[in-house]
Length: 191
Ligand SMILES: Cc1cc2nc3c(=O)[nH]c(=O)nc-3n(C[C@H](O)[C@H](O)[C@H](O)COP(=O)(O)O)c2cc1C
Image (cartoon, rainbow, N blue to C red):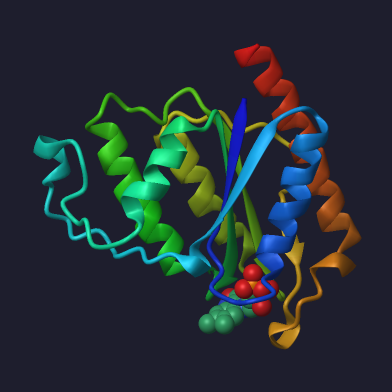
């Protein structure tokens, strides 16, 4: 079983990536194979709203890295999405990926349905709940089961852009508990 972690930060030394690495390490410790994709190295254009995917079963835009990431999403049994909070929202590059992925998957037999996954959001101070909810709505509309944790899987970090994610011990604990629950659900569903 494989879990794909996707992080939306474009910053080197990303706090969100740190949280994702902790999450994936915990999943690995439970016997799951993991892969981390950072959108920092990728070009993802916004959805054009052309609806070509309804006919062609793929995104009409082929001049970026979308198709490569979507293939990894399709192959994975689990997907964890990590985004920094920008103005109380998920970062645009992540939403571009998620909008296009949802439409292409929908017109291809809803291939994201039945997977297991969950969100991680990281903010300096406020706006977690809105961004976290955006990601939860994405999992829901795609038929992906989200295991719970002991709190929302949100991290406090990045004052002035600093890489200080490791200081939020409570946030990391809730991420670890989420990863444990995700492994349990996946082992029940897929083994
Ligand atoms: C344009 C911009 C908008 C931001 N908006 C918020 C915000 O609404 N709430 C907040 O608490 N932090 C906000 N931040 C801080 C980031 O969420 C924080 O630094 C986070 O750690 C960034 O994650 P990263 O290190 O993975 O890039 C913002 C940062 C930037 C650059």
